[in-house]
Amino acid sequence: MNEDDFEGTLILEKLAEIDKLDAFYDAIDSDDFEQAIILMKRARVDSETISLVLKKMTNSED
Image (cartoon, rainbow, N blue to C red; front, top):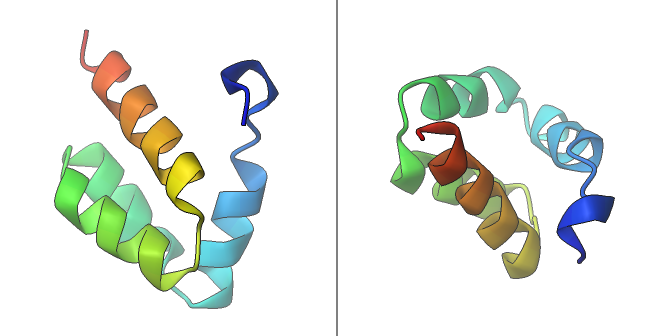
């Protein structure tokens, strides 16, 4: 996946399907990378997209 083509909506939809959207936002807000990974894996987000989300989380700290 090209970072320029990243669309977070699909990730959010997958998290909403498993009723973990609020938990994901909490993980993002608290910079809890481990919990964010767990939730994305549970929502069946592919590893490439998970890596991109983690990169964006890291960059938001700068």
